[in-house]
Image (cartoon, rainbow, N blue to C red; front, side, top):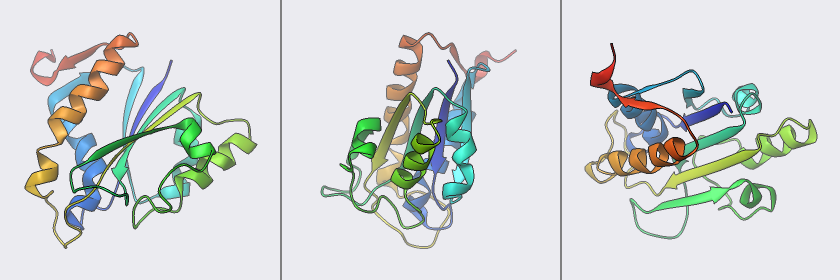
Length: 163
């Protein structure tokens, strides 16, 4: 099974870049085998449909506009996308992941499993660093995703184990 971890966001708007910072965090701390691909999707939106369609399981990591407090993390699965159970707008840069997945579904190329891990941002101020609140969420979210990957049979090693 090919798994894609897709981080979305704009690195120039602090917390809006959470998904990209998540990919960078994983690259800095872990080594993945060829069956897991890390991808910095930035603000490309529909331009990366081919990446989603090539995977069996996709983890999307992004900020979301949802009720709750900054730093709250929500999880949505493929059925939530297809049945329209997501917040109307997930993030300012986003063309609409629901539209991208619907397009893939119409083309019969939608990944078997899609999980969105979305966090409510604290700040959209100009800046290349995450707010301390969201930066503190990176390790816990990484452990959650890595635990699921390990349970699915993927081998992940700490970065210092790289030979």
